[in-house]
Image 1 (spheres, rainbow, N blue to C red):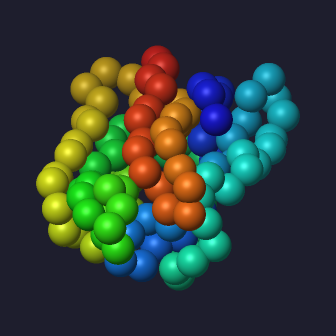
Image 2: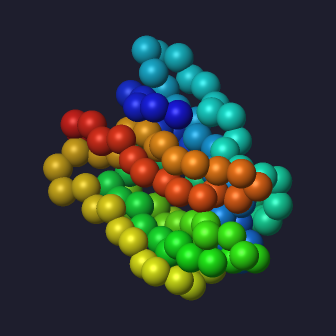
Amino acid sequence: MGAATKILDIRVRHGGAIDAVQIMYEVDEKIQWTPQYGGNGGDLTEISLQEGEFLTSISGYYGNFSDLYVVRSLTFGTNVSTYGPYGAEEGTAFSVPVEDGKITGFFGRFGALLDAVGVYLGPN
């Protein structure tokens, strides 16, 4: 996805693992959706961030699922609330708290499921 000015909405497909993630973001005053990163399985949850709300953390679990090493669970923290966990909290825990600034984008690897996820950071 790359870095954005503002993340507006997050769609997560989840079940026993994270099937897919899709982000609505603003960059250069244009609003657009990323492609869906991952497959079409699992339940769909949509997180709509409010005006002034921004991502301050992402955490979750990764591990083996159906003989694949994937992201099992995701939780999103903002300056207002916490969303999740989505998926199964099984495997090895990870956490990316942002002390000063905000999460402005995501990168990762995917196939039918989300294999890996990382974040881009920017100032508040």
